[in-house]
Length: 202
Image 1 (cartoon, helix red, strand yellow):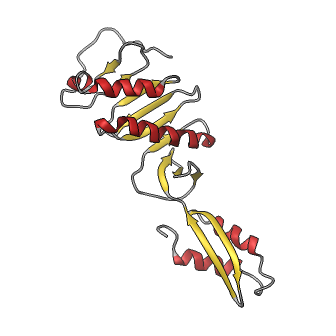
Image 2 (cartoon, helix red, strand yellow):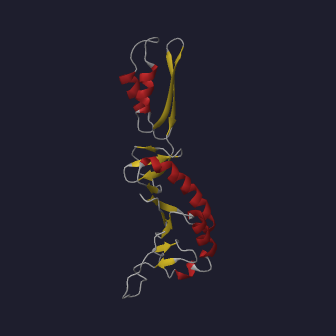
Image 3 (cartoon, one colour):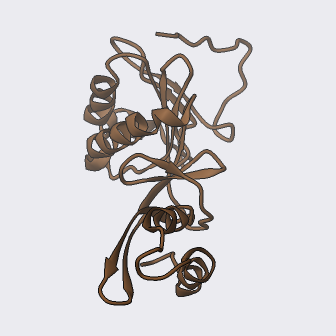
Protein backbone atom coordinates (compact mmCIF):
# COMPACT_ATOMS: atom_id res chain seq x y z
CA UNK A 1 0.00 0.00 0.00
CA UNK A 2 1.30 3.40 -1.00
CA UNK A 3 -1.12 5.88 0.57
CA UNK A 4 -3.02 3.88 3.20
CA UNK A 5 -1.12 3.95 6.49
CA UNK A 6 -0.96 1.45 9.33
CA UNK A 7 -2.27 4.17 11.65
CA UNK A 8 -5.42 4.57 9.55
CA UNK A 9 -6.01 0.81 9.55
CA UNK A 10 -5.51 0.59 13.32
CA UNK A 11 -7.97 3.45 13.82
CA UNK A 12 -10.68 1.56 11.92
CA UNK A 13 -9.95 -1.62 13.86
CA UNK A 14 -10.18 0.25 17.18
CA UNK A 15 -13.35 2.21 16.37
CA UNK A 16 -15.37 -0.10 14.11
CA UNK A 17 -14.56 -3.71 14.97
CA UNK A 18 -17.03 -4.59 17.71
CA UNK A 19 -18.15 -7.86 19.22
CA UNK A 20 -16.52 -11.27 19.35
CA UNK A 21 -15.45 -13.66 16.61
CA UNK A 22 -19.00 -14.76 15.85
CA UNK A 23 -20.92 -11.53 16.45
CA UNK A 24 -18.67 -9.03 14.67
CA UNK A 25 -20.50 -7.42 11.74
CA UNK A 26 -18.30 -8.07 8.70
CA UNK A 27 -20.36 -5.78 6.46
CA UNK A 28 -20.01 -2.88 8.89
CA UNK A 29 -16.27 -3.47 9.14
CA UNK A 30 -15.96 -3.55 5.35
CA UNK A 31 -17.96 -0.33 5.04
CA UNK A 32 -15.67 1.35 7.57
CA UNK A 33 -12.61 0.46 5.53
CA UNK A 34 -14.22 1.58 2.24
CA UNK A 35 -14.85 5.02 3.76
CA UNK A 36 -11.07 5.55 3.94
CA UNK A 37 -10.10 8.00 1.15
CA UNK A 38 -7.62 5.75 -0.66
CA UNK A 39 -9.53 2.45 -0.36
CA UNK A 40 -11.24 1.37 -3.59
CA UNK A 41 -12.48 -1.97 -2.27
CA UNK A 42 -12.21 -4.09 0.86
CA UNK A 43 -12.84 -7.73 1.67
CA UNK A 44 -13.26 -8.95 5.25
CA UNK A 45 -13.55 -12.57 6.40
CA UNK A 46 -13.26 -14.52 9.63
CA UNK A 47 -10.12 -16.56 10.27
CA UNK A 48 -10.66 -19.28 12.83
CA UNK A 49 -10.37 -19.13 15.76
CA UNK A 50 -9.95 -15.45 16.71
CA UNK A 51 -8.94 -13.48 13.64
CA UNK A 52 -10.16 -11.31 10.80
CA UNK A 53 -8.54 -11.26 7.39
CA UNK A 54 -8.82 -7.87 5.66
CA UNK A 55 -7.75 -7.31 2.06
CA UNK A 56 -7.63 -3.70 0.85
CA UNK A 57 -7.45 -2.55 -2.77
CA UNK A 58 -5.93 0.90 -3.05
CA UNK A 59 -6.92 3.48 -5.66
CA UNK A 60 -4.27 3.99 -8.34
CA UNK A 61 -4.54 7.63 -9.33
CA UNK A 62 -4.02 8.53 -12.98
CA UNK A 63 -5.34 12.11 -13.10
CA UNK A 64 -6.93 14.95 -11.16
CA UNK A 65 -10.63 15.55 -11.69
CA UNK A 66 -10.90 19.33 -11.70
CA UNK A 67 -9.48 20.81 -8.51
CA UNK A 68 -11.36 18.70 -5.98
CA UNK A 69 -10.93 15.00 -6.78
CA UNK A 70 -8.86 12.29 -8.48
CA UNK A 71 -9.48 9.67 -11.16
CA UNK A 72 -8.21 6.11 -10.78
CA UNK A 73 -7.12 3.67 -13.46
CA UNK A 74 -10.70 2.35 -13.71
CA UNK A 75 -11.99 5.81 -14.60
CA UNK A 76 -13.65 6.25 -11.21
CA UNK A 77 -13.64 9.59 -9.40
CA UNK A 78 -12.61 9.54 -5.74
CA UNK A 79 -11.70 12.16 -3.15
CA UNK A 80 -8.29 12.13 -1.55
CA UNK A 81 -5.40 14.53 -1.07
CA UNK A 82 -2.50 14.16 -3.50
CA UNK A 83 0.20 16.69 -4.30
CA UNK A 84 1.81 14.71 -7.13
CA UNK A 85 1.57 16.08 -10.65
CA UNK A 86 -0.97 14.34 -12.86
CA UNK A 87 -3.01 15.38 -15.91
CA UNK A 88 -6.18 17.31 -15.12
CA UNK A 89 -9.51 16.08 -16.47
CA UNK A 90 -12.67 18.20 -16.50
CA UNK A 91 -16.16 17.45 -17.76
CA UNK A 92 -19.79 18.37 -17.22
CA UNK A 93 -20.34 15.51 -14.74
CA UNK A 94 -18.20 13.06 -12.79
CA UNK A 95 -20.02 10.31 -14.68
CA UNK A 96 -18.04 11.41 -17.78
CA UNK A 97 -14.77 10.38 -16.15
CA UNK A 98 -14.62 6.92 -17.77
CA UNK A 99 -15.17 8.41 -21.20
CA UNK A 100 -12.48 11.02 -20.57
CA UNK A 101 -9.93 8.46 -19.41
CA UNK A 102 -10.59 6.32 -22.51
CA UNK A 103 -9.97 9.33 -24.72
CA UNK A 104 -6.88 10.24 -22.68
CA UNK A 105 -5.29 6.87 -23.45
CA UNK A 106 -6.27 7.09 -27.12
CA UNK A 107 -5.11 10.69 -27.59
CA UNK A 108 -1.83 9.96 -25.76
CA UNK A 109 -1.17 7.02 -28.08
CA UNK A 110 -1.79 9.18 -31.15
CA UNK A 111 0.52 11.94 -29.85
CA UNK A 112 3.30 9.51 -28.86
CA UNK A 113 5.30 9.86 -32.14
CA UNK A 114 5.69 13.59 -31.40
CA UNK A 115 6.60 12.94 -27.75
CA UNK A 116 3.91 15.42 -26.74
CA UNK A 117 2.21 14.79 -23.40
CA UNK A 118 -1.27 15.81 -22.32
CA UNK A 119 -1.56 18.16 -19.34
CA UNK A 120 -5.32 18.75 -19.46
CA UNK A 121 -8.38 17.34 -21.17
CA UNK A 122 -11.69 19.16 -21.17
CA UNK A 123 -15.02 17.72 -22.28
CA UNK A 124 -17.53 20.56 -22.61
CA UNK A 125 -21.24 20.39 -21.90
CA UNK A 126 -21.73 20.34 -25.70
CA UNK A 127 -19.48 17.26 -25.87
CA UNK A 128 -16.60 19.09 -27.54
CA UNK A 129 -13.04 17.99 -26.73
CA UNK A 130 -10.08 20.22 -25.95
CA UNK A 131 -6.52 19.17 -25.09
CA UNK A 132 -3.81 21.23 -23.45
CA UNK A 133 -0.32 19.86 -23.97
CA UNK A 134 2.50 20.02 -21.43
CA UNK A 135 4.08 22.69 -23.63
CA UNK A 136 1.05 24.94 -23.04
CA UNK A 137 -0.42 24.58 -26.54
CA UNK A 138 -4.19 24.05 -26.69
CA UNK A 139 -5.60 21.70 -29.33
CA UNK A 140 -9.27 22.19 -30.20
CA UNK A 141 -10.72 18.88 -31.42
CA UNK A 142 -14.44 19.61 -31.51
CA UNK A 143 -17.26 17.07 -31.28
CA UNK A 144 -16.73 14.76 -34.26
CA UNK A 145 -13.80 12.88 -35.86
CA UNK A 146 -11.50 13.80 -32.94
CA UNK A 147 -9.06 10.93 -33.52
CA UNK A 148 -8.89 11.64 -37.25
CA UNK A 149 -8.18 15.32 -36.63
CA UNK A 150 -5.49 14.53 -34.08
CA UNK A 151 -3.81 12.00 -36.39
CA UNK A 152 -3.76 14.59 -39.17
CA UNK A 153 -2.12 17.06 -36.76
CA UNK A 154 0.56 14.48 -35.93
CA UNK A 155 1.14 13.60 -39.59
CA UNK A 156 1.89 17.18 -40.66
CA UNK A 157 3.40 18.60 -37.48
CA UNK A 158 7.10 18.11 -38.19
CA UNK A 159 7.07 19.61 -41.69
CA UNK A 160 4.58 22.43 -41.13
CA UNK A 161 3.32 23.35 -37.66
CA UNK A 162 6.69 22.87 -35.97
CA UNK A 163 8.21 25.57 -38.18
CA UNK A 164 5.79 28.15 -36.79
CA UNK A 165 7.39 27.87 -33.36
CA UNK A 166 9.82 30.75 -33.03
CA UNK A 167 11.05 30.07 -29.50
CA UNK A 168 7.77 29.92 -27.62
CA UNK A 169 5.00 27.28 -27.73
CA UNK A 170 2.05 27.93 -30.00
CA UNK A 171 -0.89 29.13 -27.93
CA UNK A 172 -3.77 27.52 -29.78
CA UNK A 173 -4.35 25.21 -32.73
CA UNK A 174 -7.89 24.69 -34.00
CA UNK A 175 -8.13 21.31 -35.72
CA UNK A 176 -11.84 21.57 -36.59
CA UNK A 177 -11.30 22.36 -40.27
CA UNK A 178 -11.66 19.81 -43.05
CA UNK A 179 -8.60 20.97 -45.01
CA UNK A 180 -6.27 22.78 -42.60
CA UNK A 181 -5.67 24.28 -39.17
CA UNK A 182 -6.14 27.65 -37.51
CA UNK A 183 -3.04 28.54 -35.51
CA UNK A 184 -2.78 31.24 -32.86
CA UNK A 185 0.75 32.11 -31.72
CA UNK A 186 1.46 33.12 -28.13
CA UNK A 187 1.23 36.74 -27.05
CA UNK A 188 5.01 37.20 -27.05
CA UNK A 189 5.14 36.22 -30.73
CA UNK A 190 1.92 37.83 -31.86
CA UNK A 191 2.31 40.81 -34.22
CA UNK A 192 -0.09 43.77 -33.89
CA UNK A 193 -3.45 43.08 -35.53
CA UNK A 194 -6.36 45.32 -36.41
CA UNK A 195 -8.93 42.56 -36.83
CA UNK A 196 -10.00 39.91 -34.42
CA UNK A 197 -9.79 36.27 -35.43
CA UNK A 198 -13.00 34.31 -35.81
CA UNK A 199 -13.30 30.70 -34.77
CA UNK A 200 -15.27 27.98 -36.43
CA UNK A 201 -17.46 25.75 -34.25
CA UNK A 202 -18.15 22.23 -35.52
